[in-house]
Image (cartoon, rainbow, N blue to C red; front, side):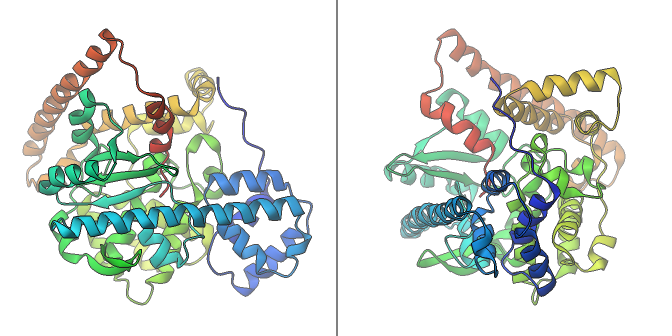
Length: 445
């Protein structure tokens, strides 16, 4: 059964959330927000979407600093305060876990980079209560994976992925998903690539490690991405779940799209980008960012998300940056799905698909998105392989496409065999695995 639809968010309610989903409100924005809270707003819708988009603590902080906070209904104020304190409590648990892992890895000389999560919370937001987390993302060298896994298993973490599928999952996502179940579950993504979904790319991991910087996180020394790599990495996050964003890049009002349920977007991912730009604005080298976006194969994602941040929050990116980047044309199937769901076409096929898609539960939709990611990974564009392997001639790229597709199909076929085995032996996922699958798929941290 599909869950009931979320409460409707009107333009005033949407504007209030976007205004408050940041660390600082400038004078004009503060006056506009103060005027909004004196209007008859649908606070049930505001609370629902603020929590869904992980911006409720920022909303509470911004509103509390305004004259007129007492005009907000008591129930809404209390709910925002609870979400603010809940984020702080959960993040303190994550902070303790990072400290424990960092110290254990350091003792056996396993280098680790905190990709986001606590690096965002502590370095960018400056408070454990302002940016809710649901998991940890740590990057280690691939050759250290087995040692790191043995250590984590000794620390009480366990595999989320069932054994027959583990090797296939590692190949596809370049990560291990672990859970430590206690009074508060710690979810950990242990990655050996910064891109943890099926995608051909040309990010230079050696350079990422060489440019990583030291920082103080959770009371211990840690390594974090350089400012340019951090911003580049954050620009990849909205498209992981907002799988139609590149097809919608030229939407005049991205806010409407972001708050539309079927897009699977989360406002906090754009706030992360905006606040990171503000934090590093004095030292951020935009020319290097442009070069790395093009060289890595993620120029389109960087362009789309910087453009949307500009439209959502105002001037944040120098004009020359967007003029030197270009959006990547979406693959045919993604463009068709977007046109069907956005109702830009009224063909019978798109209308049938839209009704079929919207009737599906969220978890089923996410599984179809993963299949779409896999399909595009198996059959990549030639330009993707040319960037990845630095081919100079198109014929070499064509041959590489055939070879890549053949190998990927073979790997997928071998990956299906354990599934058949599980079905034949009637082995079903545990209750915890079924419960955590949507959490993993919708990670925001």
